[in-house]
Length: 312
Image 1 (cartoon, helix red, strand yellow):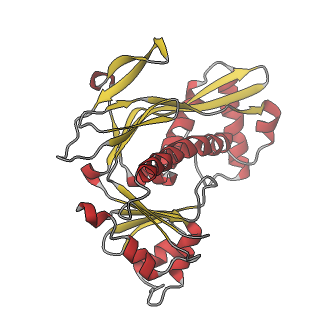
Image 2 (cartoon, one colour):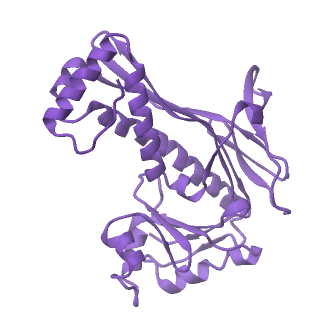
């Protein structure tokens, strides 16, 4: 029996679905729940991860990868993709090398290591499932999504911060201002940092509070299609200012005084998906236990980003 989550389930429909699915899990069929949760998780992470909107994920398979030994544990193999940069450039790369660590090197042939990300477990007792007025797969996925989304987005930000830290004395990579509110002139002037490298700004990443600053600018047309979607309807991503995409976030790890100007395409980097987000479901005693995992690899060219920092 396939389970499809319906966001418009009534409490009665949810209770019936919960009872039916719990019966399957108790009978040893955990694959149905895992499949339903995995499908929902993959849909929601595409919608909510700002990294996936800025750096488009590309699937790869085992045939595309090679293996070497972990220098800290020679008996432990590491899976990597040997990349050849698609652009002629003197840029180096910041690449994920495993265990949430990064390497900043000058090479046109970086090794992009696949990192397994696994969430903590989410569990519900049978009594809790029977008492729910919502489909428990949805509740589980929301909890798992937070963990995976945090891992992806925080990795991406830390990689950008690595680039900025290496170039913090260069005004074409990093600028700070005494302003506590983002003004149009400061925003526009800082957007020119990438042009010194003959790169266009394709994405801007900021805290949602800075997005509110933009609403105060003179001449912002609240009724325009872009701003109505971006601000009135509460969406966090749209194409504005001549094709530049704006991504705003309220994530707790994100520093609200930092604004990143990011290029795109081959001049930005790659985000590889070796294993799509998947969910494992187990039944232990009277508990149903979920956890999610994925395998990803990522690198950024070290010329791909600039930062403006406000005094907030």
